[in-house]
Length: 185
Ligand code: ADP
Image: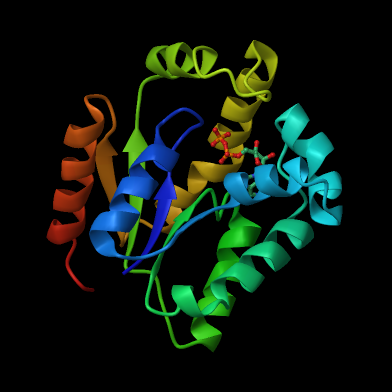
């Protein structure tokens, strides 16, 4: 299956994507993880991304899109994938559609993780990642609301909502149920 995960910072997409990746036997592709790995290893890509990630801004599309295209071209992604953190705006969504249509592929589902704001701040401030200061969290939430959330409407035909408050296991089960309910067309 070709799946996109959407949800505000702190919704637990990464945790769920890793678990769904095992259950569905499809690679978990997280743009945030790829950026962090490159920043840790001080690659050119990492150096380019660093200031945007630290500020809670989106890394410029040309950088992000190229990185995702390269990743989706890898052999392990040919049978399906779980895309976590991409697309994050309308331009990225268009690029993804172009890439997939060139390969005669299309998305099967968009999983939308829903968590209320109060719970989000609670989760993020206890996570302790370097870009998880109160100020950047707030900024990332604004970026999510203005840039990413409108994609849910764009994907309305294949979007399925998942209540992402509960135990990790419960949420995985809900996501699997939501995927099973999603009709093919
Ligand atoms: P979160 O969803 O908790 O904000 P992520 O790990 O998904 O965290 O992303 C961390 C940071 O990586 C973002 O704040 C942004 O700077 C960068 N990033 C991740 N995905 C994208 C993307 N698709 N486009 C631009 N920047 C991105």
